[in-house]
Length: 305
Image (cartoon, rainbow, N blue to C red; front, top):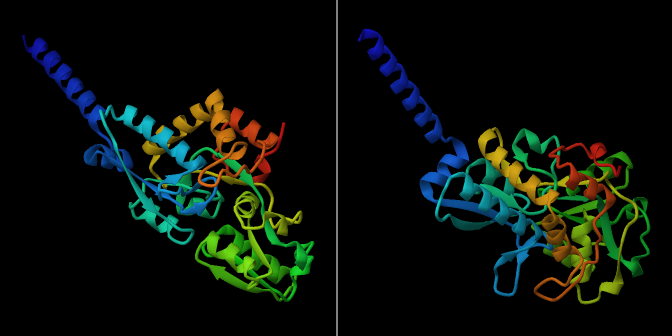
């Protein structure tokens, strides 16, 4: 009888323990489960990754990826419905708003690098870019060295403005570096001749040129300030359980035929609101990355095989 009681007690403890483990959510997943809501951080002018359409709705390649993650989170938490809240972020505010819990996913054009990984984490890479500059063809600026002594703009809080400062110091170029609040303001400075060039990720420059009043008036440099740089959806640091769900969702998307379709939708077809086609085919490096998804911040790990 005593043995039966002990056995019963052991089973009860085991049952309670497994039940507690099943319910023991932490961090972002716990907060989403309790509130029934997930908050996406979006950019207003990072075409085609995250930007506002004619109805002021955030759309783009990174937004589509984030909505796939939302579906996976909803499934993981066994929720009948999950409210999606949208919160604007800028280059300067995106990391603080992620760190303080305001946003759960940052759906934009954020470079994953070792320095940022000290503050935040990233999921699998969804794009590879390099830091270049756009200028007017009439300026006849061919190289980074041609920027010597001139006014050059970049967006505050970005990797690009840091790279510009580093190149300026290393090459003793004497560039007047102007920080702007967002990409739209940066490009406007070149349009209105307040700066001769705008340093930014090449794909973002391509989108701004395509959407300008006179696309043929601009040229993007061959000279680059960086090696290939990975973009990733940003998540909170040290939230292992949430990152596991996000990583599984992005890997499943990129390795499926749907991953290529989402890419083509935003880079090889006309996109809202103006029907622009960026005409940027998927690179061999990104194809390889999609086949074997990675969250590596190391540019040297992204090579076409």
